[in-house]
Length: 255
Image 1 (cartoon, helix red, strand yellow):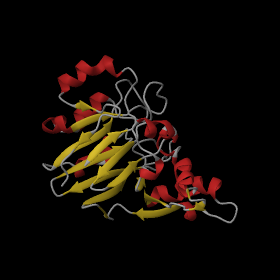
Image 2 (cartoon, one colour):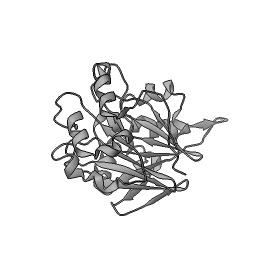
Image 3 (cartoon, one colour):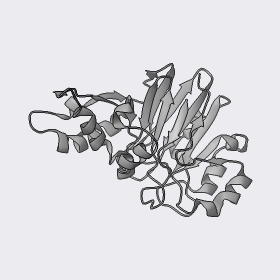
Image 4 (tube, helix red, strand yellow):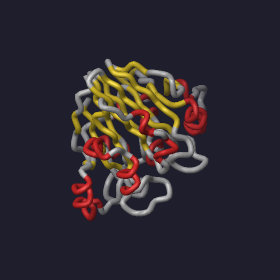
């Protein structure tokens, strides 16, 4: 798997794009979240909307879902030789997020005789469900109330024959999310939102280090971080973790 960070910043970043990714798995490209900066961040990374094979939406904050409507509309309104050749977008979503996501998109897409189902092909899953995707398994798990109280949210676990990747998305309460159930000797990477100052809805750096066993700190990739990340590089190096760099691919041997 090659993971390309379209952006690495928080919701209010002025320096980095939103924390969204393209995961190239086999011959397919999975878009991990679709924030409002997606229009620019995908272009800067060399992708177009039609390059994407499937999308996973973790939750409905604008830096994770605000660009989805444009993506599905532009894919639908494709023309070849003057003929409408729509591309329906496969969307993976946890059942707790689904009704809210559908309502959000339907407000704009349910008109002129069309519904959101003309634009999206939803795969709605529970915690126990497995999505088979290009030789790996995708498991979407509930993290409701772990990011923000009262907010429905989810994380993503990618399991391959040669190793696993954990992508919790946004989490404040690491214990409530119970992320360690996905961590073992086969863990290749944990992409963890990490705040270096107090934040009411994101895990702080000290909390991340305290939660995960020290022997796997080298597998942690800090993401969704502050714009002044350079102020904390020595601290990151001393802790033995890594940090995600915008548009710098990360290759992981899932299979």
